[in-house]
Length: 113
Image (cartoon, rainbow, N blue to C red; front, side):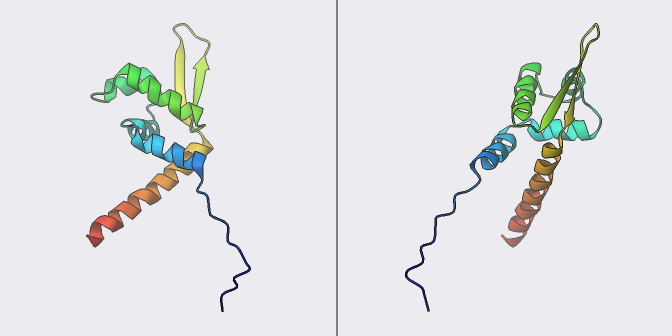
């Protein structure tokens, strides 16, 4: 029996986190940056040197976007010449686990075709 008196509210998706995932996945280089960080490459100059096709300008935009979302942390050292390193935050690791789940889902979708 259906209760006609009870109203069900519309579910609204998680707008900010969905935008974050869309932005990071939509960025051509974000996932590569995470791979580099996981391999211990945490300085921007080194990232550009070891990644074919990645420019300093694009890398800086990518890093800035990830910092704004709270996924990466920038560490600046008071040295001459200046030294900057990036690390993945706890929130960034949570996003990576979500992205791993999305990758597994895509693999299952590909298998079912």
